Image (cartoon, rainbow over all chains, first blue to last red; front, side, top):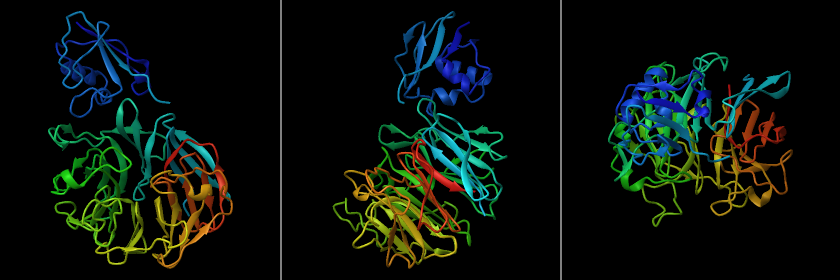
Length: 90
Length: 359
């Protein structure tokens, strides 16, 4: 089962956040699944169209995803999905 | 007497309270997060915070107990498939206005957004629905555009207390629109406005009201600080008259407040237009008219008169009784207890101030 890991920055809004195994085979369904674990978190990661927010990145096994619009990148059964924020602003 | 002040700032929601005769900073919420609007619903005392996370999108939080607890509600979102223009999907970029629907609609709230969508809630803010009639207005695709922000934005929502289905909105850049049926149909209300930046300054569309305010004591009197001057209407926005100061600073700016007890008394925060966006002659002042804009007087006592770069954003000036407050882009907050004639510092080192509200 893929495991989803999160940037520490999201812990401020979702204090229970931890590495979470999720049964899923596409990124959109994976995000829906983690939203059931942490209600509301999906809207922090993608906008209302399902596109990745501008300053958020998703890595699959250490590689940045390519399809930020529809999240069509694929992953394996034991992949590690890491959701992080870009470093920006001040 | 309102004894609380909510400041929406670039680094959080700052609460000030008046104890004895002194205003003091008392609390902070959402520290580090930009708060585009900090707003209190006068009907039920609920507080609202519109957040503009750099990374995580725009969010709305509601507090039923003056900040003791907060809950996040689902922020206004555009329905699937809508586009700002061809190939640019419509998503909520910024929450720019909040207003309640009046006493006769106790669960109604209005929210204005960039890229130009007006949203309504009829369940106390638990959910919001796009007013598609305004979004689908035939003028929007070609004659609304960004001013100050990338796309057109609704920054002002004015509800008529005599008929709470009558609502006026101010849009940068488009102008003023009116509905009399709670958002089913819309009429353009830009007659008499002037858009100097357009090829035809007197065209019906593409005006830039920076803020639209109704006089609480006479809702037929409306004021707007516009990109091209200060305009006033005495016929419910059917027509507008330029009441800018002929010789003097009161012309360009963003913010405007109207006295609660006098439709002819209003305050503006003058700035230098377009090119530099700083205080006029680097000296900060607040200008007030007591006669409906026929004459203006600028007040400076207590305000910096040299090397001031302060701009007052559109939601960052407010009046309540004899008290007036404003916050600036450089983190200064000033208070007056005599209708703006003299000023005291509340703080000189806050984050950039986006909104102020007495409650």
